[in-house]
Length: 251
Ligand code: ADP
Ligand code: MG
Ligand code: ZN
Image 1 (cartoon, protein in one colour):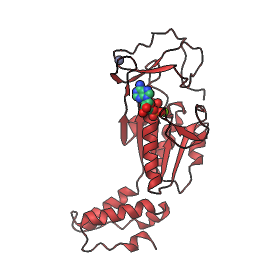
Image 2: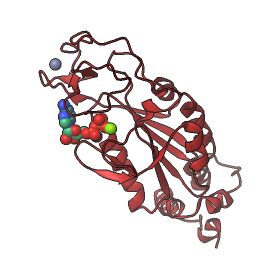
Image 3: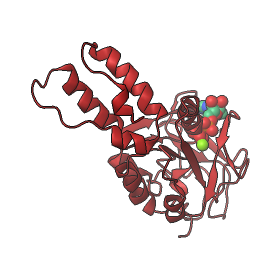
Image 4: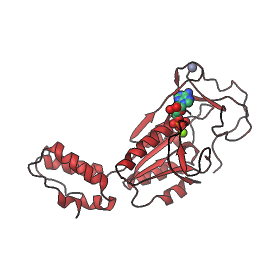
C-alpha cells in the first residue's frame, strides 16, 4: 500500500502525525517515498496538513554532512555512530573509503578506538558514484581527503538525488594546508561538524595534525607514532624537517 494512503490527516495533532510519518518514511523504500509525496496543500499555511506536506517534502530530501578535523579527533567514530543509527532504523546505507587507506581492514572503516562498520574500498570519486545503489538512502564516506576533487560533484549529485551523504576527513594536512576536496565539501554541506582531538603535548584543543617522523613518502598513512594531534600553541610544522611533498594522492 502506498505510504500516503495509510495516513489520515484529519483530527490528528501535528506532533503525532509527524512522528508516525517519520517512522513510515524512514522504514519505507525510497521509491515509495517519492510516490508518497502529497500534493501541495492550499489554504491555511499554518494548518496541520500544510505542516505535514512541508515535512514530507523535506524528509525526502538529500543533504551533505561533513565531519572534519585532525587525526584522532573522532571523525571515524562519529561517522560509524551515525551510520550505525541508520542500520538500527533499517535505512539502507553504503559506506565507502579510498583504496589508498588499508590500515586495518579492506572492507571496513575502523576507528582508532576499534569501532567499525562495513565499507567498500573505491579508487576514486567516479567509481564511488557508480557504486551507489538506487535503494541506498545514506552514503557514508571516510577519509574524504584522499579522494580526488570530483568527490564534491559526486556528493552534490547524490544529495540532489535524495541521498544523505556523510563525509568524514582531515580538513588540514600535516603542513596545515587545506586537504583535497574537504574544504570545498565543507562549504557545500548543509551540516558541518568540526571535531577536535586532545593535544598530545599539552592536553589542549587539538586542531592540527603534526607529523612527528621525517619521511620522504608521499603519504605516511596513520603509521603508529607518525602523527600527533596538536593544539594551536604546540603545533609546529617545521618541528621535524620534511621534504616539500604534497600529501594528496596522484589522480
Ligand atoms: P579520527 O578518525 O579522527 O582519526 P578516530 O575516530 O579513529 O579518529 O579515533 C578517535 C579515538 O582515538 C578516540 O575516541 C580515542 O579513543 C582515541 N585517541 C587517541 N589519541 C587521541 C587524542 N590525542 N585525542 C583524542 N582521541 C584520541
Ligand atoms: Mg578516521
Ligand atoms: Zn598543546
